[in-house]
Length: 318
Image (cartoon, rainbow, N blue to C red; front, side, top):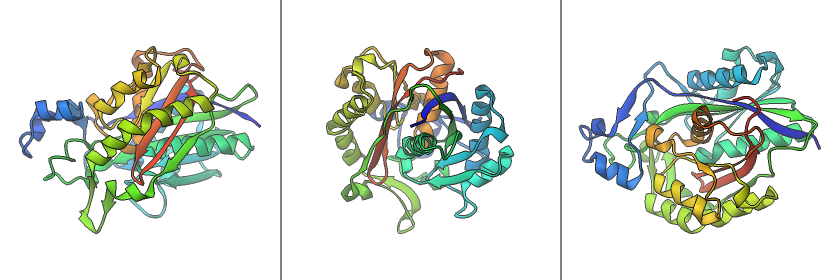
């Protein structure tokens, strides 16, 4: 089969930074409680003119510019989002229009916070069988549109932003490992955006999700690395869904990857759902470049309860 490599990554965040102190004026919370519980110091909130389309397009432009490809080279656009502004046309086609991409596959997927690794897997599989040569994979979310700003347990978490990958076919050995993905439907109600609950606002059973990540996530993450035919000690970096610093920071030692650089963008970006992995990796590489092809573990979990992960080589262009 045809190999896949990561050419470049990009990200975009709204200009408005919201520190914990601002939330103290809105709900019964404080900076110490937020940092102790989830590790967030500040987050970015989009303005009324910023949408999943505009943010996704900006992240994609950054990745495309770095990759050296043009819009005309892209033959697949996949967008992971759970906060799409329209049912139709989908977000992928709207971002494609903004970028001048046409005559290609354009699809959205909604797997909530785990959507981005799912999208990477779909792009890799399309490239492997020759259905695409250059894929633009985007995670973009405007969670503040679905946030209950009277609920102190969730409004301190949510944020907005976008991230993007450019994946390309290669005759060399693939740098995207087989995906490990799954779901636990009986835990589906643990993370919800439902019109029948909280007026279509984000809600979650944080304790249930935290228990799952504590007891189940490490073994699943080890299996992802095994499928890549690597030992955890060979990982250069780990990029988890940026949900909670208490979930992110212990994982490296739990799986035997103490040497890996761990992305902790949650501290300054909050939880951006499907956008969190590409945005965290893009920001990490801007300060800590990695050798092209260096193995990076990507893993995300969220609504469904769904999860997905793979090992991917560091981008050629950083």
